[in-house]
Image 1 (tube, chains in turn yellow, purple):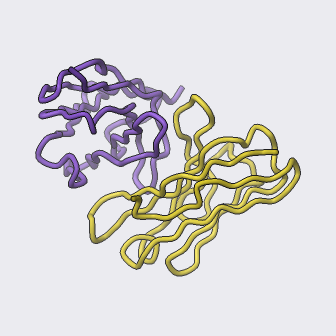
Image 2 (cartoon, chains in turn orange, brown; image 1 turned 180 degrees about the vertical axis):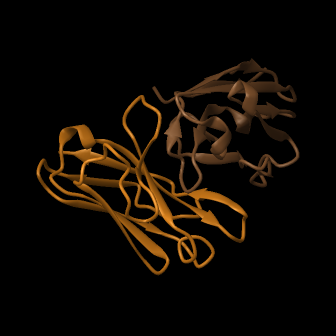
Length: 110
Length: 115
């Protein structure tokens, strides 16, 4: 059971906009920033969004992050087939004194 | 090129020990917090340990007292000493770098705990 809660799956058609939610608590998302990681099939994870809504260099602006209270969201617009993979949210947890991850969301492009 | 390369994984018996290494290149290693993150086959990511630039270390309860993270800045290297290994420790182990997030990731090394 992960500390952060994500839907196990999400899907969309090419060009569509999809969102992935991440729900936490006051000790993690509610008091610390959220990061999102993308893991394409057979590869290592890659940082997609950091500090709630910042994109590292090289990440397309189709990817965006937001946060409100104890929940965060990742939005992907203009969905492409190469976006298919697993997406994880993460945050520092003040109670556990460590990093906690969501269980991951498998994104399928139909 | 910014790169992290893990090594040291393999098959180990329950109760055994293993030491993982991570070689960094292309960035100022001593200025980065360093981490280990693991992923059991077909499952999600789990944070394993962190060592910051001051040498302070952090662990989740699942590995505290069994795993030790360390770094050697002169060699641009990160290590993870794993003791009292059990089946639940079987996973791909990634090293990562970054302060506010895991900005840089290695390709991972597989650790299998089995008799």
